[in-house]
Image 1 (tube, rainbow, N blue to C red):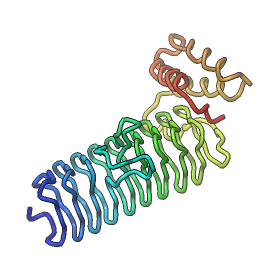
Image 2 (cartoon, rainbow, N blue to C red; image 1 turned 45 degrees about the vertical axis):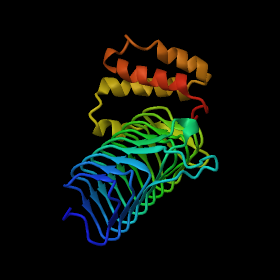
Image 3 (cartoon, one colour; image 1 turned 60 degrees about the horizontal axis):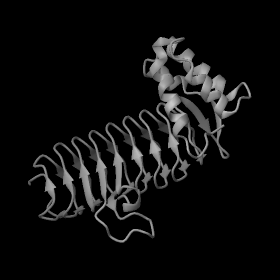
Image 4 (tube, rainbow, N blue to C red; image 1 turned 30 degrees about the vertical axis):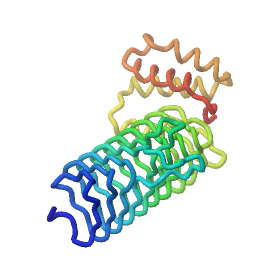
Length: 262
């Protein structure tokens, strides 16, 4: 308990590991659970049925686990679940879920979340995601693993962004973004594949070639989405090293409900 500043207000029902550090004037509600090694800065509010994993660094002035900004919410015991080793910079707001959508907002592991990011109710953020300053997620957004989102970007409710995609600065994302793509703008446009990010993560030339081929089928040959999806689904076997990448793209296109960024 010596790691909790004397001016912090921690409800006695909160479940706080003895190694957790909590800074001055931070308020922790009764249903909050924080695992070992996590640091919470000054002037934060942690509330709601919020579970925070190990070794997170939550900087000062954050609101974590507040009620959702949804008029249908009527005080139900919904949740926010945050994984391990996340960095959460200043002035971020993460909201609880709403019962109509399952009631859980979820943030995975090893994410780098910069200042003024908003994660609304029932969003799912994967692992190794980077969101730059003023990234705004409306409700029900899905951000898959290894996605990078540029600053001042707004993401419409129910949008999905596939793994390893990159969204450029000040973009308006109102349609689903397929895996591996590089997009930006308002209106949003696909500029190519996220080659720099993929190379940094060790993608082989064979995998990159398959991703370029999928981009070509989706965006360069004038095909309908149904035609492109069918041809992409037929690629496994021709590029065995990239079969998992092709499967990820095929599954994403099959689940896209808002149409894809084109």
